[in-house]
Image (cartoon, rainbow, N blue to C red):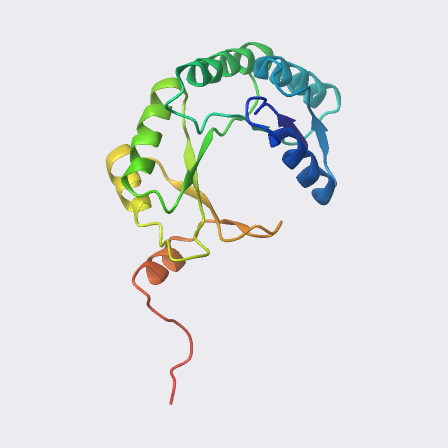
Length: 179
């Protein structure tokens, strides 16, 4: 596995991803803060191909959907991947904060305009947020939830389980009957 630190706009993003790469014991491709994110992706694709990596995860600044230049950069990144690694199996996941409600739907809608989004990662489900917006996103946009974030530890990103999600959404407890 290789990580690509292409969120070069946000202060400390590269350092955060480098820390997580170290915790997970995986390689990371990064450049300096402020560098061209598409250049990072170009280098990461080349590294993934030469090292025969099974997975390349590209972290971008895409979540800033209201910044036109960042959305244009996302288009550029997609063009590079299309050109340099057309045979790759791709998932394009948008990470949405489970506490933002309708704003998450607007974000997903805008990302779909610039990228072939295949699913979402819904985060911050470890607090009071239940992530009900996932139902609206699936219903209105047809985007499935692929993963959920329930904390800040390495194992807190989990595959989405629809039954568990619905039970948690409606506070339904399963298991052995209580006496």
